[in-house]
Length: 109
Image (cartoon, rainbow, N blue to C red; front, side):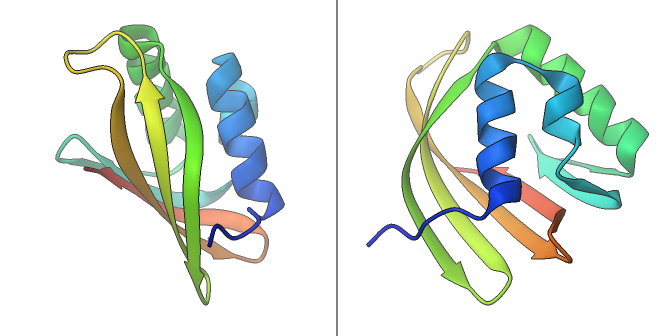
């Protein structure tokens, strides 16, 4: 069963689908960590750089198809469509939340 997403995740995916970098960054804590494509970025400036680069390169949209929660950790399955080989593809977004903010995001297959 798919859990109802908390507001930070709802806001993140809505902004991601609009390609709105400023709004995508809002739900993240200032010292958050993102791991994607084998690289780790930490802090708002590094995460913004990652968002700008991947949004420009891939122009993805995400349709959330499943969400599970274990404490403060969320695992989201999304159908990701964009400018990349194999599109659309199902990716998993693993979020950790604290104090109503995203503190960690790891994206993988």
